[in-house]
Image (cartoon, rainbow, N blue to C red; front, side, top):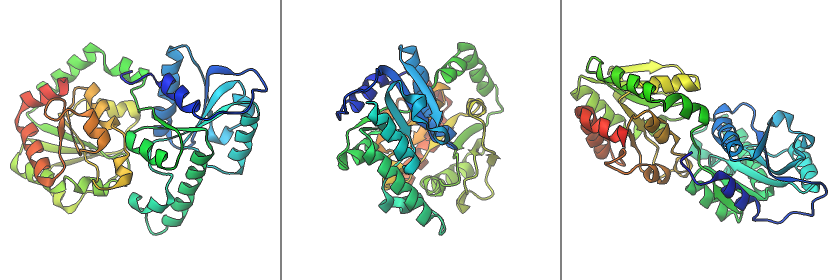
Length: 350
C-alpha cells in the first residue's frame, strides 16, 4: 500500500504503555475500531482502508460505529482504536470495560482538533466558537485517556508528543477498492485518450470538499486569476461549496457539486492539473495529510501544492509535482504547467 507496515506502527504505539493483566484470552492480531458516526471520509481513510490492508496481512478487524460502541462487541480485540471519537460518559464506561479485560486503547485523529485554544485557526462562525471549543476539549480527553495515539501526519505526531503521549504516524492511504478500480492499465489508457483527444482545454481542478477552505484558495487566487486571463485554454473546475474570492469573478470557472467518492475519481481523471493550496503559517492546516497529492497521482494528474511538511514530503519539486509558497511561485508554476503538455505528462507519470 505504499507506506510502512501499518500493523507494526500500530503495535509499537499501543505497546508504549503497559496495561493490567489479561482477564480473558485476547487476540493480539485482532484490532477493533470505533468509527465516528457522520464522518465517512475519516472512516474511509482511517478505518476501512486500514482494516482491509491489515486483513490482507493476516489480522482480524472489527468495526463498530460510535453510536453502537459496546465493549462486548470488541472483547476479543487486543487493541481498540477510537477513531476521532469524542469523550463522554458513555465512551468512558465502555473504555473502562475494555481495560478491565486487558484491551489496549488507541486514539486516532487526522486533524488538529484536540487543542481547544486553537479553535480560531479553523475559521469558525460566531455561533460555532463555543461548541467547537467544547468538542475539541472532548477530543483532547480521548487523546489523554488513551494508551497511545495514532495520527495521519508528522506535524500531528509532534503536537501529540508535546502533550507527553506516545504517538505513531499511520498515513492516510489508498484503499484496495480504489487501487483495483483506478490503477487498471485500460482505465489509464482511456483516461489519457480522453485528455489527449480533448478540445485543447487545460482543465485545472480544485477539490474543496467543504466550504471551510476560503483562506486556502486565497493563497493562489491572484495567480490563478492571472493565468486564466492570460491563457484562454485554461479552465478552472471547482468541486464543493467553497466560496471563491472576487479575483476569480467572471473568469472561466466550472462549478461541480460534492461528488461520491468514486465519482470524484472519475471527474479528477479528466483533469490536467490538480491544485492543493493550504494556508501557510497555520498550525491547523499544517497537519493536513497528503491525500490530495497521492489520489491525483494514481490517475497520472500532477499537483501544484503549498509546501507544508506533508505535501513537501510527498512531492519531489520539479519531478513529481510542483510546490508554491508565494503568489509569484503559484503564478510561475501555473503558467509552466498550463503551457507545457509534455511537462504535465511527465510530472503525472513520475
